[in-house]
Image (cartoon, rainbow, N blue to C red; front, side):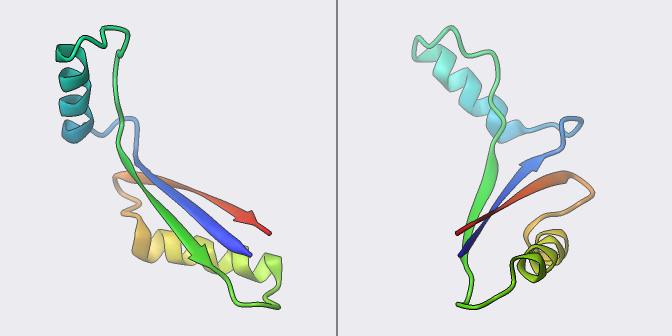
Length: 81
């Protein structure tokens, strides 16, 4: 089992790195790009035999306390078998 955690800036927070990427893409001729938001991706392997609901609870705590800054970032967790 794996937990996939996606961390992105909240929509109300400026994303200077994303803006730079968008400008660069436009300058390279990709005029259809209206905006870019950057983020982080974590793939976490789970030990054999762990209960799925316990894993989800633990991943919520880890994402909130360690992987994301909940003041400026949102996160989404997927548990895959």
